[in-house]
Image 1 (cartoon, one colour):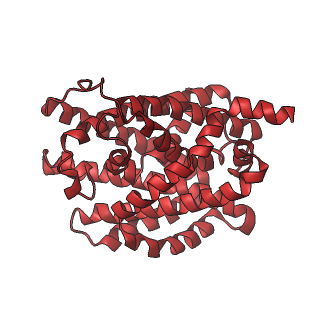
Image 2 (cartoon, helix red, strand yellow):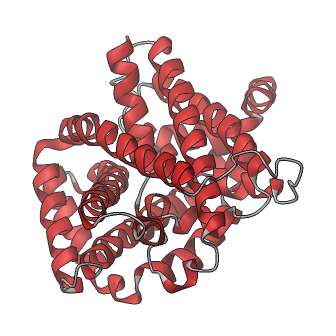
Image 3 (cartoon, rainbow, N blue to C red):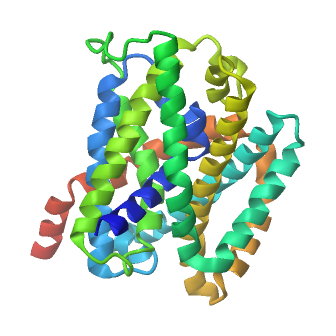
Length: 340
């Protein structure tokens, strides 16, 4: 039970902590000053939404996200949101691939070298199907989370930062809703693809509570650190590097490797949602669909990492609010649908 619960927890976290989140760019886009309450609300909302999605997926024993999506938004809107999810997964996976290029540039490697490495890694991963993604998440995510927490706590101690000094200033609390909505849509796709593999509701409880608490805690400490270097963030494509400049080069190397793995796990989760959905139409192996999808993505990576995040993420955060509302009010919606 615990092992399976942690497996799904790492899948949820791996889907969420990508290039945008791990680099600090996504957190700064939504939070920043006066956002402590917003992050607390995000923690609660995120756990609830994950629980609703996983319980629906478990009940339907779904092999891909379409049955789960239909249950959440209703039959009439399923087609529109199906297209929206595919576009979202497509564009965010492009962002992850661009993030791999940006990470390579930080060490003076060519942009296309970073992109080439992640593309090859994704193709190799999908040669082993869904189990390959689950296995690599269980190995990478504990190291990634431990590394991020170590750096952020060390920075907090070294800079003598107070974690709760501005708790009375919370004007940005509404940011919790678009930020949660932004991160929920890919989870509909990813968690909808593993419904036939979940064995019990106890696994779901462990995964949802664990992922919400982990992400909420890291988000709060990370955001608090970014506030201290607010004036420097504009100078960095990846805000995390503004924190790492205070530490030895070896730590920069280690965190850059962990950042790349965060990028890779989210790109892999996005690809999982895409290929499991497209496999219903094309009846081809997952690896073949993954290769075709990656070929279509490559030209879009030329727009750059921070540009893609600043334009695409806020738009989808707002559009996804409907799904967020449906998930939070799911008990009410489901009863009304049964009554009709």
